[in-house]
Image 1 (tube, helix red, strand yellow):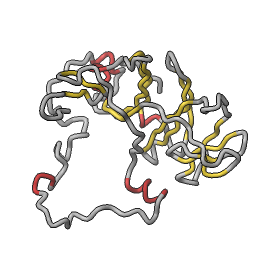
Image 2 (cartoon, rainbow, N blue to C red):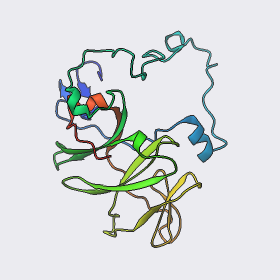
Image 3 (cartoon, rainbow, N blue to C red):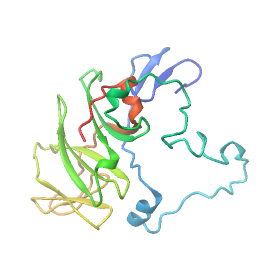
Length: 219
């Protein structure tokens, strides 16, 4: 990622790697990645922007990386150098969800990675820990999403979470009777209005792990 005139940023490391901003960390925000069909289940009245904007958009008539970019058999866009044994028999274009754990100076200490196709049908929950933090990870292969939040609330409480089925955008309930949505907000219950702290995380292709982070997979 290049920001003119001088700084260069690493999207995956989330910090400047060259120029006047080298070493400076980017501020991040939670983004929910899913399919259009799942989004419509959560928000039936959702709308998308029209392509009829009055401006030309000839550069984006199709998927910029090619229609078969995610096809395992299609050639990569750039040379790769990853030990196939480290992939554990998985395809290098398999999608994973990675939690990034950082030190106080935001240097990356650890990553926990989850294969999206392993979450199965329905909404499932798992727990994981990095060197510094405990997390809950909630996902669904059939609904095409994974999100993660810190287990400990801002007041130090640790709740017992359970997944909720068939109630999108609500995906979690707990031992206090709260119900939480995909963005981590308590939509009803005694903690209504509170929010779980989202993990610093993002989706990536498996091949990226061998280039930037540890190859370790949790699920």
